Amino acid sequence: MCAGDMMSRLEAMQAALAGKPHLKRLGALFSDTVLFEVDGRDYYLHFHRGALERIEQGPSRKIPWQFALRTDAQALEEFWKPLPAPGFHDIFGLVKIGRARIEGDILRLVRNLRFFKEFMALARGDAA
Amino acid sequence: MTGHIEAITGRYVNLDIGGVAQRIYFEENGQGTPVVCLHTAGADNRQWRFILGDEDFTENHRIIAFDMPWHGKSLPPESFETAEYLLTTETYMQTVLAFCAALGLEKPVLAGCSMGGRIALQLALHKPEMFSGFIAIEASDFQPAWYDIDWFHRPDAHGGEMGAALVSANIAPQAPNAERWNTQWMFMQSGPGVFRGDLSFYTRDDSLVGKLGGIDTAKTPVHILCGEYDLTCTPEDAKRTADAIPGATLAVMRELGHFPMSEHPMAFRPYFADALERMRAA
View 1: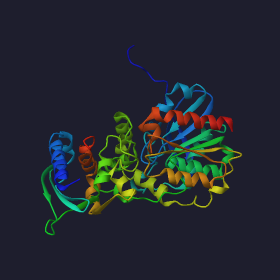
View 2: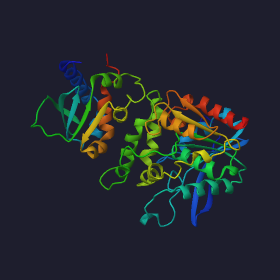
View 3: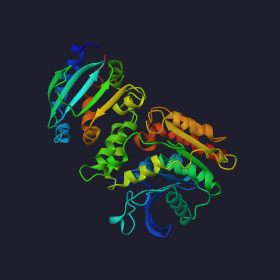
View 4: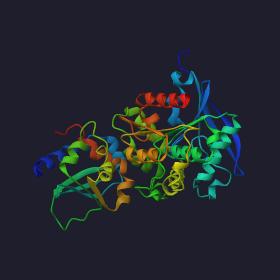
């Protein structure tokens, strides 16, 4: 997956998030920047009160982030299938099978875990 | 009458467990071979709601599921407000044995999931004569935590909501949406520190390691069930456990995760039926 495709995917997730009032409510206290790394390419997801305000492409050494999810495009394609294979069905599953790493302030992720996991799953079913 | 009243009944039994008075809530349905069902960490007996109501099982079995102290409708003991809840192997075994004795159950089948599966294996080792067989679901000899159990008991966050979001990783994607969320609701409702205290037992007590070979399945059968989507007790963990118990059998369950009887009851029931048949045949 090229960087443009991933940006399109993230923008679609951004729009889908805006259409989910329950996620807006769940994410009301979530105003963090998340580093999303796919195949070595960096995307900075700037959340503000449960909305994805801005997506910035890296690399950058100047943008602070609170936690990072690092994975690969092939794993994401499986993750975003309607019925992913065991291990690919959850971001912690990806970590457990060695296809993703979560770094940074993990407690900030855990405190907003339902919000972030549901955000990540917004592309489910859209995978090629 | 337009409403459907289910056949399940709920009552309380008052027990002395290690010198502590406990009022235990339990539900039951059916007649025949008693089957005592144990819930997972951070949840309660509602996880067994479908098995309790399934006539194919209750026709020949007395299905019983109780809430551990601190869980569901079983209140914590007196002075809980200053106590740190930490479940131990000894207290857990005493609780199961006291419950079975109070109900006058003669050699019930013990079916436990997750931490309930762990204690089933402990009882298979230490008190096999009290049971006619063990169905150990999502069970292994030991599971170290892949998370920090202290996350689930903090003054600045809702442990139940975090716990539910975490355990959702263990639910198979095939689970019907309603039951996926009913399964998580129990974690959301769990009392402060209870999930943490259960996980302390589940992820820190390694007293079963190296002792599985002492379980005599010639006297009491052990059947292990494990969902293919379980990230906590993986099929590899279950196989390692089954391989260490001479004569134990294992079924890896398709399209199921760590809460099979609750997250997807229709997918679970053939595996549970097979497990009960194995107990009967032994």
